[in-house]
Image (cartoon, rainbow, N blue to C red):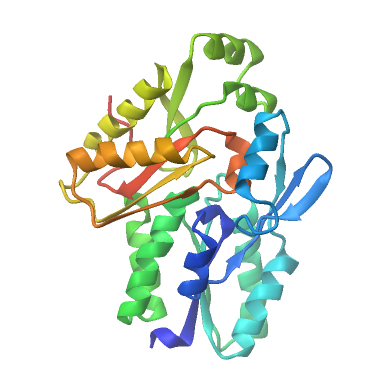
Length: 294
């Protein structure tokens, strides 16, 4: 029965705090350090997103620390002690070592609680791409999938989630060592906006560059055509790093071309935003491929 296990994730999924609470999905927090202060990324409750991105725009360069084994055990073990199993959907292992620590924790707990199950799934997703996978898993949990059936569904469908992203702040990527200073300076001067996807290895990959924010937003929607399965997208998600109006504009562009059942719009949280900076827009949906098509 679905009531005999707990569906879990981490803050890399960028779902709203209200979503986790309403659907009884525990989340594990990564640690963020900014301006000499460390805090748990608790989905905007300790440090509001607007405050976080205001500091990022001012030149702050946050860093993140992975979830360690002890932190996982502190959350997972009480669930096992209640006689329930765990299905944990983790942030892509290509972006964080947290997933590997979750796997090690699961191994240790399996020895301690041999009658219980702890399944760790490397989502190979991030932000609301991971969130969309959690959302679809939650729906099936509520339909009555047992843990084995849900595990198989998640593993079988995680590669169908398309991540389409454009980056605003090249200087932030430069400060984080992700692009050269020369490329960042020149790109910023001429208004270059890199477009990225999440590839099949769970890594971010630059697939094109555009001049101007509006052009980048438009092309983001145009790129969807390469991987949509049909005109009806089901549930989709759009996230942003402190640019709500642009996220809504992208949603409206999508609505002009496709049908969808619902569109959740939310902030990119501190964990992901620490590495990507402010002004980003990203679109997530179930498609037929993650491979970029030019």
